[in-house]
Image (cartoon, rainbow, N blue to C red; front, side, top):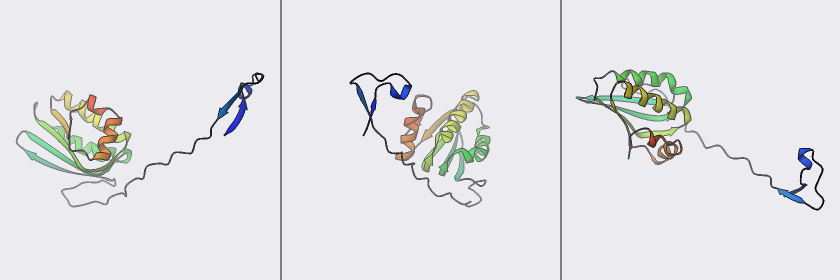
Length: 151
């Protein structure tokens, strides 16, 4: 622990007899990123990104299952995902995150944009089954206050 006279760092005259303690904090260690995934089967798309997705359509419901990681470099692939939003009002659009391993703040932003687009088209938009680590990031971003997130 270092001791510094009060005011001396600010160019002010030190106060007689007053000292403040400063503590050097360790650098934060970044969270490990999962390895990037390669392209899968024809039913799965990656477009040179870590995010893969599969679309299942049934009457009244479109389910988009995401796999891998979702970060800034996946925004172009996510535009392809948003093309699935072409449906009649009231249609349910479900993002299944049970196989999504990682998401960053850009991924959260993509979900906000998707939710906004779904609202404009009067679609029933929801996010389902996020893994614990992904759910923690969603909770930190407080998306559960804006979007319908289900366990």
